Image (cartoon, rainbow, N blue to C red; front, side, top):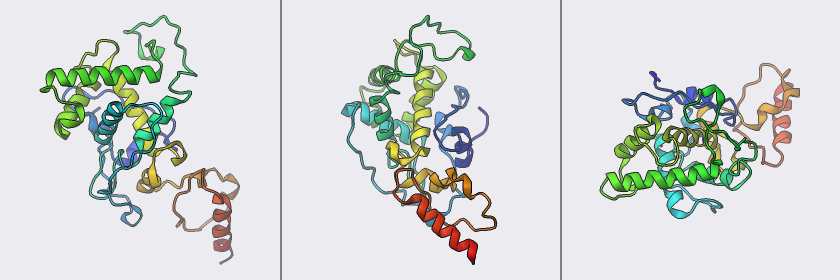
Length: 264
């Protein structure tokens, strides 16, 4: 990877709805992993952005224990950090999104083939090459990364390292410079990054994208986009905030506003 991403570029990488994620190619060992998602938001409308310094609120967790949660929350905040205008992944509830996914069918590998054979050096076209479900991948990856940190950084925890050193650890996971005992570090990093992007841009009903911060930042309308019967209402300014699929009356509010606009 040779170019830094803008926040809008990141949305293109993640897919228009932030659900079908394509993880970027590995960065070189000299690059920071946070270049993947530490992106400028200069094009975002400040009038719709929540304050970037608001504290994160952790909801009820179903999968992670407290130490795992602290690791994930610290890691995703480095992948999608706050800036002076917009909050980052921690505030947006990405931890809760990932926690819910791992506690459900995704975490159990419900749609994954896990019977082997597993060939670690297989070409990328052959897909995932681990025997672990996503839940197992996280549990092992977090534990072994924490063990690496305590062994190499003065017996401190990952979340106590400070931003530059946390970035160093994440970069080493991405490049494979850190060798975890049980699994390929880049696979763990890619999974964490992909899920962080999903949690930041997915619909809030799944636990992340608090206050639709990801959508507000890039100007994505949310559930409005599914109303294909309205595409012939031309030349109307789009002035409404994004709407989640979980919001009651979303369609009615949309129809009312644009019907009145069409009559003016």
